[in-house]
Image 1 (cartoon, rainbow, N blue to C red):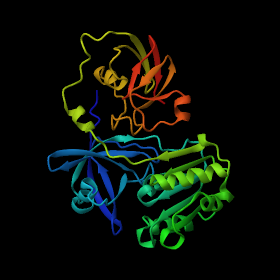
Image 2 (tube, one colour):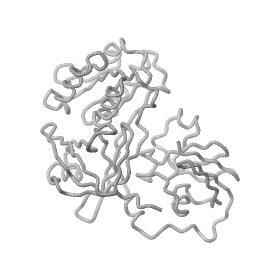
Image 3 (cartoon, rainbow, N blue to C red):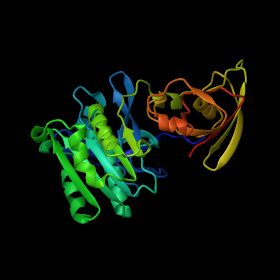
Amino acid sequence: MTDPILTLRVAEVTPETDDAVSVSFDAGEGTELRHRPGQFLTLRIPAPDGWVARCYSLSSAPGDTRPTITVKRVPGGMASNWICDRLRPGDTVETLPPAGRFTPASDHRNLVLFAAGSGITPVMSILRARVQEGGRALLVYANRDDRSVIFAAELRRLTEAYPDRFQVLHWLETLQGLPDAARLAALVRPWAAPDAALLCGPAPFMRAAAEALEHLGVDRTRVLTEEYRSLASDPFAMLTASPAQLPADAAETATVTVELDGRRRTFPWPARTTLLDLLRAQDVDAPFSCREGACSACACRVVDGEVKMLRNTVLEEEDLAEGYVLACQAVPLTDRVEVVYD
């Protein structure tokens, strides 16, 4: 099994606002960082008593010369303050491969994007990719005031470069107050038939945006949301520890067939073992990040049989109806299960 931990060298640290920076990386020799628009990296950050893992969205588009994350300082936030204050060109950081499902489908050409504060980061990746590919996008971007607008210059450049395909509507709380569903709906009404709508920001903002889209009749299945959560555990610790072993006395109550990267494999599946633990014990490079049922990096689709998830805070009813589950939380309920990683 290949080592999923990647080492990236910091190429540039660019101030975006008084409390946000963009960090661009050069991949080391033999390291390839492929990502889809809207995905994130899980970085290993030094802490007073060891290490912590934190997820940061990529703001660069796939194919850009240097993959880039954008980080906003959080008061009291150990990782964000370390990145903003300490990280310099030439430093190296460890990361897990890009992950996340906050990314539009390839046929989603007409997008409505809602972002607030640092929620612009994955949205910027999606926006850059779509307009470069010939798609259209409307961005509603909420901030406290004009000094807190991340990517202000880049957004102006994009509107000038693609005037027929991109429009940005700024919402400043110091001038307009807090966003509400009725006024957000009025803003996006001319674009009310998008292929997809993507929302990222504080929970109250996303609730207002989702309600606005509902008022406009946008199908919920076309709405994607991204929420930021701090990891309670360290996924790097699992990777650097000894390989996992299946319980010797576990009853092999199921058989699972897994399709990943064009290859189908079948394994016995002990009842008390999660699918992710099983696959890693079998030297299968299954994707994952948080291992807490909170990031969807390990999402896969059950096409036959049934599983139970021990925890789920990220998949919505529409995802569950399509058969998606979290491998880090899935245990078997039927004798045979078939799973596909899309």
